Image 1: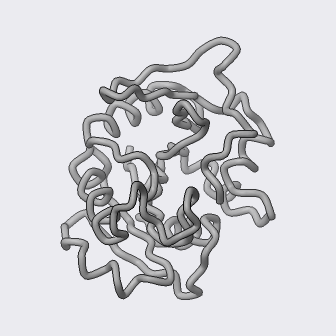
Image 2: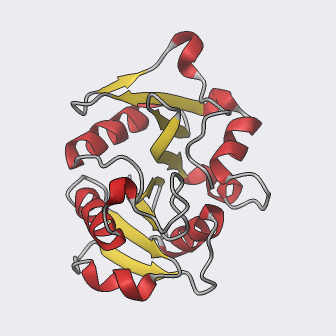
Length: 199
């Protein structure tokens, strides 16, 4: 098993419409913190995809052996286009992907590892995280769905996957202490109407 993490660090923040930056933190601080958390988790590599503000952000990311920083040559704003750049830049050995956004709620390396463990043991090709508002990141995806992730469409890539077959998903909840719980029963299908993530 080889797991590639793809950090979407371009585009527009879902909450404010400003460059990717949660809670008033600077874009550079946010991207650096998310990159460090992924590097300290058990993923095999981290691919950071920068958008229009690549020159402002790249210098704040410390080089690391398992890290690749790429910029979208078309300066895309849409997550689907940035995701395509990340998937194309990931190792061909990857058997699974962890897709994360820099404006998501910050997670510790331990929480990322617990989420990944649930996904790998769960027997389904996709795992999503929900919070009190709706869908959040990271999203865990099997390589078997790579081509489906990149299918063109007006809808966001994650919403398109959910609409095609909600039964393929594991739904995981993370509490404020970082504990991870598998949601089963009536609430186990990912919410299509949730305001997050926008793509």
